Amino acid sequence: MPVFAVQAIRPDGGEETIRIESNDKASAAATIAARGLTPIRVVPAKDAPQKTASGRSRKMATRMARELSVLTAAGLSIEPALAALSRHATDARLKAAAEMVLSDVRNGASLSEAFGKRPELFPSPFPEIAEAGEAGGALGKALGELADNRERREEVEASIRGALAYPAFLMLMAMGAVAGLIGFVIPRFRGLFEQIGRDVPQPAATIFEVSEAIGYAAPFVFAAIFILVVIARFALSRPASREQFDHWVLTLPRIGDAVRIVIAARFFRVLALLLKNGLSAVPALRLSANAAGNRWAVRRLSEALTEVRTGRGFADQVEASNVLPPLAAELLSVGEETGDLGAAADRLAGFYETHFERNAKLISAIIGPAVIIFTGLVIGIVIISILLAMVSINDIGL
Image (cartoon, helix red, strand yellow):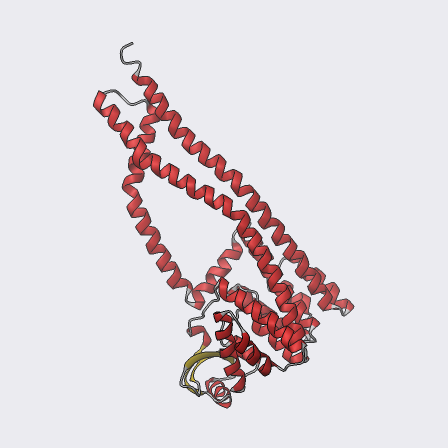
C-alpha cells in the first residue's frame, strides 16, 4: 500500500507531518482529518525528507517504553499512563515527548500512530511493536519486551564504543604525531642540509619529498573531502539514492555479509516480538520489514510480503528476497513446518545478535594493536631516515 506524507495543523495551531499508508491522497487526507487534524498538503512519502533518531533520542524512547510498560502493567490505560509520565518525568526530553504523544492520543491517534509520526524520536521498531501490542491486547507486555531488547542492544553498543575508544585515541595521537613530524620536524632537517650544501641520502630525500607533497596537497585534500561529504549527505537524503547506496553496501565483500547479519538480527528480533504478541505471519512480516534499517532490504522484504499474501511459503519468499543470510531461510522453513515460527525467529535473532557482538568485539580487539603497529612503523621509518641522514653529516670531513 502506498505511503503518503500528510502535512497537517493540530487543534493547538501547531504543524506537523504524518506518514500514513493509504490507497490514495484523498483517503490519506480523510484519515488525518478523522483524527481532528486539518490536512493542508499530501505528497508521496518517498518525496518527503525522512528524519532519523539520534542516540539520545533512541535512549529516551527506550526509557519511555520501559516506564509505559510499568504503568500499564499497574492497570493504567495508555492515556492515563502518558499523562502520569508527562507530569512526573524528571528528564526534560522525556517529559516533552510524553506530552506530544499524549496530545496525539487525545486527538484520536493510537500509540503506534503517535510513535510513527515522529521517527526522529521513536525509530523503528517502536511503532511496529506498539502496533502489535495494540492488536494483540497486550501493549504493556509488548513495550516491556521492546525495552528489554533495546536496553540489551544499548549495552552491547556501549561496550563496543568503549572497546573502540582506546584504538580511536591511539589513532588520533598517531595522526597528530605524524602531522607534527611532517609539518615541523622534517622541514627543519631539510633546511639544515640545504645550509651545509650536503647531498641528502636517498631515504631522507624520499621522506622530505613526501613531506613536501603532503604539505602542498593537504589543503586541497581537506577541501575535496569536505565537498564530497556535503554531496554525499545531500544525495543520501534522497530516498532513491539512499536505496541504491544501501544495495551497493550489501554487494561489498565482507562488509555486505556483516551488514546482512545486522539486518537479520533486527528483522528476526522484531519478528519474534510480533509473533509472540499474537500477530499472524503476514502483518508480522510487514512490520518486521520496516525495522530492517536498510532501505533496499525493506523494499525486497516488502515484495516478499506480497508473494506471501498470495499463499506462497514464508521461508521461500524470505530466501528469494536475497536480503538475509542463507541459513535464515532454512531455519525459518523448519519453524514454518512445525508451526512454531515465533520460536524459530527468536532463535535466529539470538544467533545473529551473538554473531554480531562477537565479530564487533573481535574487530575492536584487532584495531588497537594494528594502529600501534602502523603508527610505530611510520614514525620509525621517518626517524631512522633522519638519523641516517644526520650520521652522513659526520662523514663530511672523512
